[in-house]
Amino acid sequence: MGSVREFFFDDRYWTIRYLVAETPHWWTGREVLLSPYAVAAVNRNEKDIVVDLTKKQVEDSPSWESDKPVTRQFEETYHEYYGLPPYWGGAYAWGAYPYIARDRAERRGLAQGESAWDPHLRSTHNVAGYHIQATDGEIGHVEDFVIDDETWAIRYLIVGTRNWWPGKKLLISTQWIERVSWLDAKIFFNVSRETIKGSPAYTEASLLTREYEVGLHRHYNRHAYWVDELAAG
Picture (cartoon, rainbow, N blue to C red):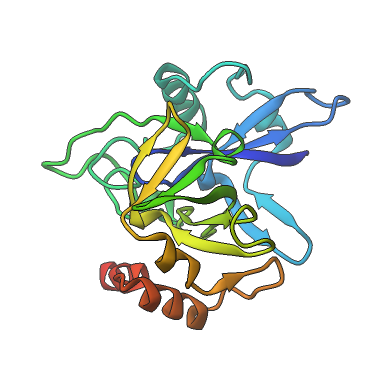
């Protein structure tokens, strides 16, 4: 029913909230938002994303104007239309839960004592090109994103360093971000340029294996995110 053009993520958890799909002109001829809740499978080899929705459902979904921000009012209408729990309705990345649940029935209501939060959505298209700042100066810019299609977290930023080391790309975890200046389009990390320079190189042909991730986290002396997720069950 179309193709994915970009993603919207929140700037608190760096988690994908919507896939932006362009539909053919012979169909709706508009861009529509798809929640990760609707994704049934991601076929990497075929480059297909299978959604658990009918064309009719998408065609009748709340209209969104691509030249305007995604408002809370729109999100509430959108989630009510699809019968989805609000991801902002709790203290965790997916509302009352740290990670997205495959079974929607598991996610009913707010957990006691948790409070809602106000998400600010950002476009991957707009954030691509942001400058990466180390403790001692600029080191590169955001070229792309590595997304975990189980949790829908943006795991890594793909950083291009062509102005310093031509042809070399690096991965930096979004969990290591110290702060972001959205106004100045800069992302700050509390590591030196030399440390970033010495990290394992990344190429389009690289296999992002757990072995690679272990080496990456060991290089930066950082805690592994998958340990926490396994503990959370």
